Amino acid sequence: MPNPPTVILVAGVSGSGKTTIGTLLAERLGWDYAEADSFHSEANIAKMRSGHPLTDADRLPWLRSISAWITERLTTGRPGVVTCSALKRKYRDLLAGGKPEVAMVLLDGDRDLIAARMKARKGHFFKATLLDTQFADLEPPAPDEDVLLAPITGTPEETVTYIIKALNPTPVAH
Image (cartoon, rainbow, N blue to C red; front, side, top):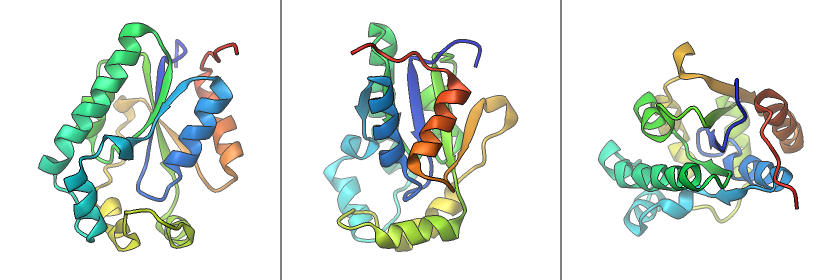
C-alpha cells in the first residue's frame, strides 16, 4: 500500500482466525478493535446457531453496521481493526471500496486446517457444519481489489507480523 492504512479489515471464512488475528493486530498497533460478530442481530445469531446459513438479505444490515464503524474511524482519524468474513466481492466493495485508507486482509488457509481449528474451539455459535457454505460463498479476490492474502499456516503472531510488514501501519504511541 502506498500510504499506511487507518483501518485494517481482517476477513476470512469462519474459523480462519479473524478474532485472534484482529485482536493481536489491534493490540500490537495500539488501535481500537471491533469484532464482526458484535454487529450481528440476535436473529442472525439464532439462525447460525440453529445451523442455517445467512442469506445476503440477512447480512446486509450487518455489513452496513460494520461499514458505519469503518466510516466513523476514517472521519475521526482514529485507527482501528475490524473483522468481517467479507466472503463476496460485493461485501468487500461495500466495506472498503473506494476507501484507500482501508486495508483488506484475507486470512488464507485450506478447508482441512480451518475445520480442525473449528472442531477445537468451544462455545462459538457458528456450527462447524456450516464451513462448507462459507467456502462455497467465498469469492477469491480479484487483482484489482488490492486484498492482502495472509497465510494462516504459522502461529497467530507470525500472521500478524506478516500483515504489519506488508501494510506498514502506524502504531499509536501508548
